[in-house]
Amino acid sequence: MKHIRNFCIIAHIDHGKSTLADRLLEYTQTVKVTEGQMLDDMDLEKERGITIKSHAIQMEYTYKGEKYVLNLIDTPGHVDFSYEVSRSIAACEGALLVVDASQGVQAQTISNLYMALENDLEIIPVMNKCDMDSAMPDEVEDEIVELLGCKREEIIRASGKTGLGVEEILDAVIERIPHPEGDEEAPLQALIFDSVFNSFRGIIAYFKIENGVIRKGDKVKFFNTGKEYDADEIGVLKMDMVPRNELRTGDVGYIISGIKTSKEVKVGDTITQISRPCEKAISGFEEVKPMVFAGLYPIDAEDYENLRASLEKLQLNDASLTFMPESSVALGFGFRCGFLGLLHMEIVQERLDREFDMNVITTVPNVSYKVYDKQGEVKEVHNPSGMPEITLIDHIEEPFIRASIITTTNYIGPIMTLCLGKRGELIKQEYISGNRVEIFYDIPLGEIVIDFYDKLKSISKGYASFDYHMNGFRPSKLIKLDILLNGEPVDALSTLTHVDNAETFGRRMCEKLKELIPRQQFDIAIQAAIGAKIIARETVKQLRKDVTAKCYGGDVSRKRKLLEKQKKGKKRMKQIGNVEVPQKAFLAVLKLD
Image (cartoon, rainbow, N blue to C red):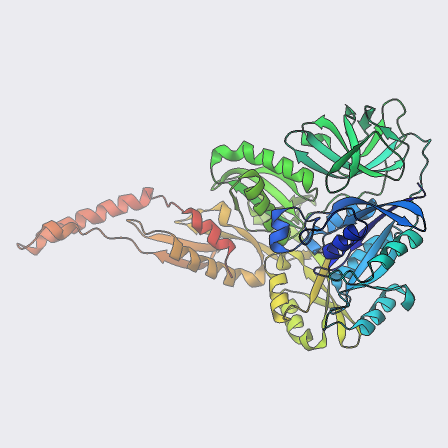
């Protein structure tokens, strides 16, 4: 155990975590790096150049004549995947905090650092990309010293591209990061921090042993679910899985026991032996809190069960995805899914398409509200169709977030305008160093869900970095906006919105639908309504059939007779007329704005 070190790499997006991990793998001769970012094995990760999953890998390194085993976990940097980071941190004793020498400390750097400090990890500051022309090593060093309160000489200057400082990093990992603590004689306690689905072997769980020893063929049980299995194969994670006969305290490895159903494996569960079970599960593992909710519906109704199976398999690999069944009048049966953000939602859609060949329709993303009725009871509403009648509601509370935005002073004006437009409330401003400032806002989560991040990036020319955490619920004036077609409400198009935005949103929605709904033999009224009050209306004009075409010459009364007959028919038709809403109308509403 004295020769084991478990550590992860944390940083803001694009600060060079995966490239640095490649150099570490190369230097320890674990693997020959043939292409960039060896650990990002998903096609999506390679295309977008981002890390989506945490990746664990074991390296061996000889230091001062002794052999050490280093377990490295490379983590994502994007705010939408912060749950992956929290899980990786739970399986480590130390972390490399990587900061880009040309960009300095950014929002995600700070929030990941706090997460690591809460878990008492030993932090090794690394300044990456020192070989770049635009690097400002001295200024960035000042920022790191201010952030961590460490000494200047503790900061390692490195470059993921050229391999500068890699040896120093490995030495620092061995010297500064403590070895795992634990008792090999105690009953087995191992924390599951990730799992994957393999169509041939069943579910493979990744774990870190806190106490005890596990051997191949042991009878084990999962503490929280209470299920029992045989450990058919155990081993360590290199580029591939390497089987071993036993794993001891402090090791990070995997277990295959032929589990077929995904409900039986929970990330954060504890593995123990049946013969000598541990008394209690390992604590300190937080449940995921989804921020954004959206409905996922199969394009073909018969694909519903396939979609369920695909989501379950995806959930094994991505524990931050939550879902439950729901149905809609317009779209049939589907699932209400919870995501950590819009990028997460996009990635889940892409992965469903690529890995499971599932094409899905996504409804407008929204957040969950608390509705208090006049009897004082609370109901959580994720979906506008679940709202009680307006007359029964006492008040509605919506979730707020505390946003921290780090930017240079030239962009403060436009960013404040953006936040105020999203009903934000300025809490404080702090100057970090030089001309860099951190602005704290309280903003309703519903306002930032759709396009806030994109707008922030474009007005600050990519320089502002954004991070947030939940900050409770507050009462708010929210109303349900219904869309009526010929007086009939369409539930898939209704939204919850703030009083101030309702009118403009309703008007834009009506205009958009007018373009998309095909003309019929009768007028179609498209209306936006709040309760019984109509706030906007557009009309799709009828197509007129030329009934008088066959009638030429003769008396005008012949034409009039035919037109009167048509009028009667139109009147009858309007009473029973039903409007077909095309598929692309639902999708276009998502792309409004």
